[in-house]
Length: 273
Image 1 (cartoon, rainbow, N blue to C red):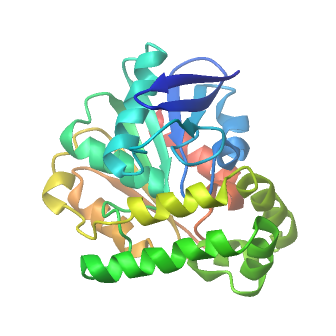
Image 2 (cartoon, rainbow, N blue to C red; image 1 turned 180 degrees about the horizontal axis):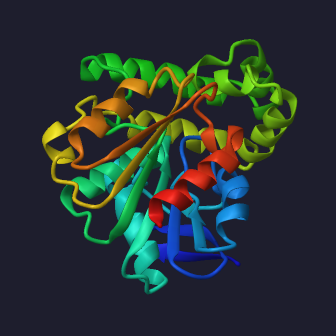
């Protein structure tokens, strides 16, 4: 089922398939519900799988300012989706920027989460350290890429210079097929809105270690061996979140749900059982 609901000033799009114990999934930057499809096709045989498009992404539409392109608002959106569907407790599956929002929310209240699954992510909302001015300059430069190049140009550029996010895909034996899936996924996004999101969301380099220690739900942390940007942040969260379980995927990069969906689905099933 494809549907939407209103929360604050946003019409939030979600997909709801399968039945049973609920899993809510939220993606990362430039992604949308398509990111989870290879995993949801497997998990929806046994669980109710609900994936949402984050503000500024996919089919979700923010009607007016303030746009809420920040971790706190996105965290509230996740809870609002559960409330809309009258779900009290659920497993929360996250990737990258969606994980930033989820783990920040869990620092203050993890009581709604049957489990928290953090893939290729961290607890700082700016993956890069530095002063507020340095971070602002970097984000502006990063956002300009979305404003300058169309999606086809960006995909071609990533094939030549994959960087930390697409390294695993481009070094895969299945690179051509995975890049085509990535092209299909990202092309749903509005590049100008994503540029706005980039300038607004990635602001805080503090991992908030004390907050991590407040998370009480069962937590699984997954990162790809080739996901250079999030290896240390994953290890930090595993050290500080009480009882957290950490898994490294050998030979895999940042896009774990695209690169290794069967492995991820197997590990999620094992963990939440």
